[in-house]
Image 1 (spheres, rainbow, N blue to C red):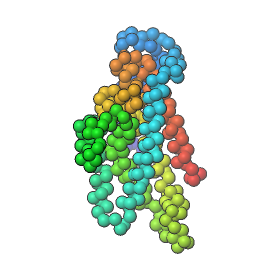
Image 2: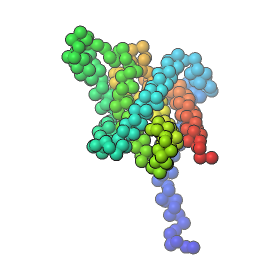
Image 3: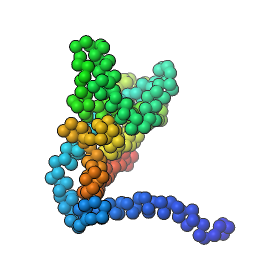
Length: 291
């Protein structure tokens, strides 16, 4: 049937997306793959090294330290931050809690603030003459007013800053999932004599599993892409003894400070492969109980 539109109309409509995707996504990805098998000495000097960048990466102590720091941060995000988000969601989903809408907004609002601003704010709070030391010294006269939080507890500072920003953000996902849990199943379990914990494990958890697995994947991807928060909070460095060095930060240092774009591209592709594995695992876990 003739719709009245010329045959070239769909190509005109799709064309802008194809051009933008090719220029800003497809071409950079393919070019980074070419760079990954080269050793570069600035933007115009390079030589083909095949897989030498990847083999060197396996023995690079700085990369493995960055990977270890990133894994620790990711573990804290999954095993500390997400349970707090779920706990807040359960609390603010309870009908007897007054001011639920207000508190949802309060806990979600840090996600609306820029990451750089949060890094600067926590940097000032954790500085030697910052709010944390001032408050603790006021409460405990024997406390050192110049305690170096950012030197002694680098990873702890990063985790706390990230928690303040994202606990409320992930809470919204869990709230949406909890509000879709079947009340009939929960009431039936209650009639059968099931207590709060059995109802949670046997009714709530299976119902929110798809959303929970999705939130876990988002947290892992965000953790492995950690850069702005750590870079600004630690004053454009990995912190003392590189305790806050992350994989993306190391990639940035190699690519845009050392100008070894080939090695930086190799790091990027390894990171992409790791995230792809996590995505496949999440997809598999999310399908459990659906087949």
